[in-house]
Amino acid sequence: MLDFIANPLGQILYFIYDTLAFKSYGIAIIIFTIFVKVLLLPLMIKQYNNMAKMQELGPKLKEIQTKYKNDKEKLQQESLKLYQENNYNPMGGCLPLLIQMPILLALWQVIQKPLRYMLGISIGDIDKLANALNLSNSNVYVQIEIIGKFFKGESSGVENILSGDMINTITTLSSSFSNFLGFNLGSVPKDFSSNYLLLLIPFLAAGTTYISSKLSMAYSTQTTENPMQNSMLFIGPLMTLFFSFSFPAGMGLYWIVGGIFQIFQQLFINKLIAKKKEVQNA
Image 1 (tube, rainbow, N blue to C red):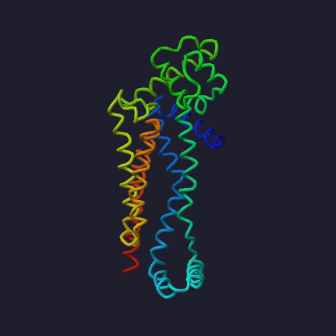
Image 2 (tube, rainbow, N blue to C red):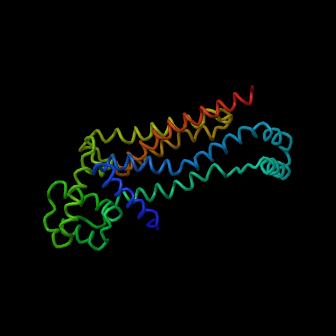
Image 3 (cartoon, helix red, strand yellow):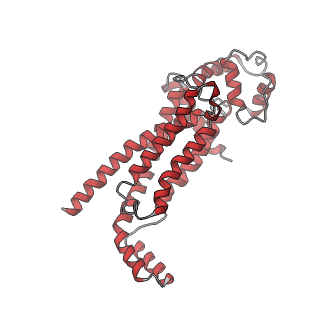
């Protein structure tokens, strides 16, 4: 269903790996993450502008809510009128999230199935590889297990399935895939018995998500008044923590780098907002 996104993402990730990242899968994910975040930057700026506009309209909206608290129809009409007069779309802040979600799901597919999306190996040949290496095709991470077999030198019997060049490509990929700063980026952190350092990835991913979310609320007038918004501050990091435990470590690395990028991005945006307020209050 997401192949139309996963295929180009896989090709971009492989291009970065093969040309810019010195054939390091981990560095390729880092560069790729920055590439995606920069690509989405115009949408994020639009979201921040939307939040700033909401801050400006907050007092007027509160007046309307107080005045028409017993007349829901009038309250809705006056609120809509206020939005239209100020060219504000209350759903505008959701657009970046709606666009990021399919990208995130497609990226999960790319990291889960690198042989298919990065190297372009057909599903039929992947099934043959799994059978030749005595692996279960029903395992969702079978392609990662295949790469692991190449890393361990247990890939005999695949010569009749793949060309010599492709075998060399997978062997090179398996080395950087299975050993990046002591991590196997194909390992799932919940199976940390083989490497306790894997536990760092989910907590770092959740931590950077929390800090970036906290910074994004720094100048929101509703942060201390809206319990739901306060709860969202914790829901996002907790979801990141849960999924980072369940997905391959490469996905967690994407979240960590994306979180760090967003922290610096948010610091810059908050600084601009603060300057804008100083000018307005002068």
